[in-house]
Length: 258
Image 1 (cartoon, rainbow, N blue to C red):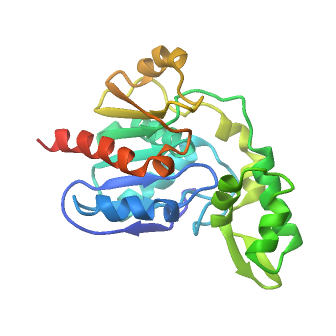
Image 2: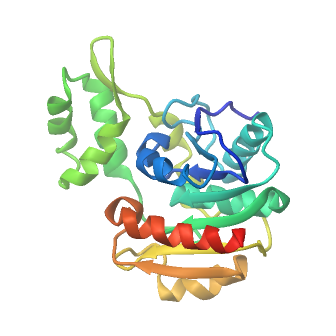
């Protein structure tokens, strides 16, 4: 069963750009980029299931999440779109490209490869679970709780985008249990078979381990048309180098419009 995803839709003309966030992110994280991209046309930024303001439900398989996105495109009468995904959202985008290539005008993958990964997010999930269970009075208290799990303040600030005020104190809006219960799917490879042969841009961070040189042959088996751009950034390259990230994406989309 597909879920009705919460989304931001700028409206406008032309083939829309669909933006898909990564694990524990949301459409809200992309607002500054959306503001820029809407100058070229319509932008749709969505919250995946169990994230942001979208419904919670069991199952974090990539085919399930891709079908949610397809249902949203159908709802919005979008026959074809440029699809951009970061990290987990990049795997959703690759799955979408494999399952319904006719719906993509192009594919943009930000710092992820079409493969399984061995690392986990136990500390991040633990930090948010601590906030959910303790119900701190304010964001400062929530940050202190998360600091028991996460030393890096930028990571805690990113996680704090998931905090909301509820009855009895601060809580989280993500489906932590649903995410944790199916984390094996999240860390696994995208769903679908074969290659996506359409126009593709892969943007990676030079200081990230998510798309190494050793991964490129296997990546090109799945994305044979991929153009590769490397930014001096880590995994959150769109946040660390926003102007450069914008420029790379804009150049790619402008060439397709010619």
